[in-house]
Image (cartoon, rainbow, N blue to C red):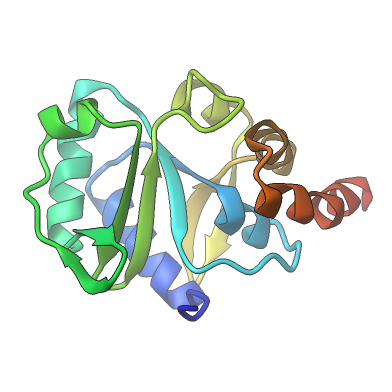
Length: 166
């Protein structure tokens, strides 16, 4: 299993997205980790806005990150040329960047409106001196519950316990 991403790797990946003006929210396991749940994860999952301008900015940021398609059995990934038209046609994309794995999820489980609904309750959390937008822990729990995969079900008790903590 690949190592967990460091805060510095997360900050660099998110910093490039922010520098390009990409509207996004960190979701999934990384959001859980950033909410101080003790959750471990090996990638950054984001839910980007799907408006045309944002997709163009995202494509440019992916190029700057040296993003490649993540495929089983090929640690280097497969080269592709990111562009807004291609991004508009996918719901999920797993990538490897020069700074670590990055997953794009445009419609997370439980959130068919994606960024539009997740950004409403998102908060900003500082990671290695970079302020990053992170889905609320309530939304992370709701998405994991909606996904219902074994790994999500196992993750729910500690996440729910964190929700109950003051």
